[in-house]
Image 1: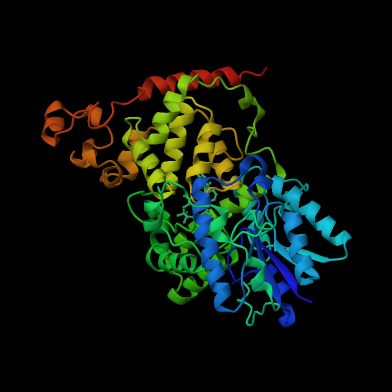
Image 2: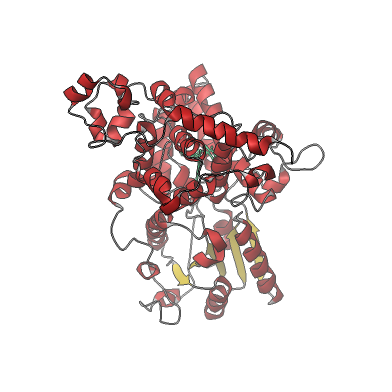
Length: 494
Ligand code: FAD
């Protein structure tokens, strides 16, 4: 009897334990994708994620088709869709790779129980993590609240399992092409890819198309390029937003087009191939630690299901945020019109490409939460909609880190100064100039604080503040003081 492989965010053929198990011993496989965004509860994927998902599914469908296996697509209730495919094909086993979002864990547990009670063989597998969140424990059996001891504990675990190859021979049961026959979603719930309507109605995705190649092949190429070109310099390069110093694997990892075990192994073989010279070793350690932060984010979310919505440190629940009638402050931040160049460059990069450099994510986050004193959840929601790598675990961790309320967070009183950050990490001003062309006309040393440039310099550059580029919307010093005063209010024990 055939086995059903339920595809979720594991859009690849290599190192895919659920697919390999379903196809074991040459058993025919039915790969099924079910579009059920509502099942993610409050965190249904945003617009940029949907754009990515469409193209990634397209890539996966074509990889499967090349092996003679059609991808079955459904939408609506996952259990009902699985049952209908099981009934139509006589499948006797179901395999999937685990997800770690609280709403999806609940759903998957329920579905596993239901299917097993009907006599089906059901197995879930790990494709997304080096170590399952429940296997990394403190000495007393608890979860970790700080990264360094968490990662140390991971490193004491046995080496991650070697990645699995693409199953050598995939076959589909006869007749499953017919399952995708109907072109309209209204037809018995059949929904080929375009009918899922994942692509935006108004096409804003030109910048995304230019930047990204969703799918397993795009992921593999990006990893290879990064290891060759940037790993040795990663330790310093990762902090410079103007250069391609990081891997940009985050959306590929989020959608499971590549898994951390494959990355782990590829790094080890790069080290073996090139000999372990210093730069490469440091680069590799630093890069693997970032993969570790991703693991840590999953660990925290698994143990604290409220993490995306509520501050881990409950004291922050009473933080006196600033009122923002009409969303004026938030809107200026979202559009990249705050008048603070590094912040605006980051927000524009995000909107144009669906991605933002990590250093700049920290800076724009700090500006929102501290200088504008708006709730971190507002930033989290905007990132959720606009990032192609929007990930519940990593996004919550990032925002609670910025806000000072999370696990191993930056202390609230450490307020990033976006001008200093710009001068330090974008000394040439190239990053700011790329995203804010009006500022490219200024000499590099004035690009991060154009309001401080002498009038003559502004005139030479043909730049009028308030016309070509906004005046800063807040005074950085005064707003920092206001943030620290607000923090004093919640610091006092109640
Ligand atoms: P690299 O430097 O090449 O790192 C390799 C991989 O490690 C990344 O692809 C990512 O999977 C992981 N990683 C790196 N840094 C972190 C981190 N701090 N936390 C968790 N994982 C990390 N990352 C997301 O994947 N999705 C998000 O929604 C997200 N939201 C964020 C929000 C804020 C406010 C902040 C400060 C950070 C957020 N990050 C998020 C983390 C980080 O910014 C991105 O993972 C990183 O910029 C992706 O670029 P890269 O792939 O080139 O990273």
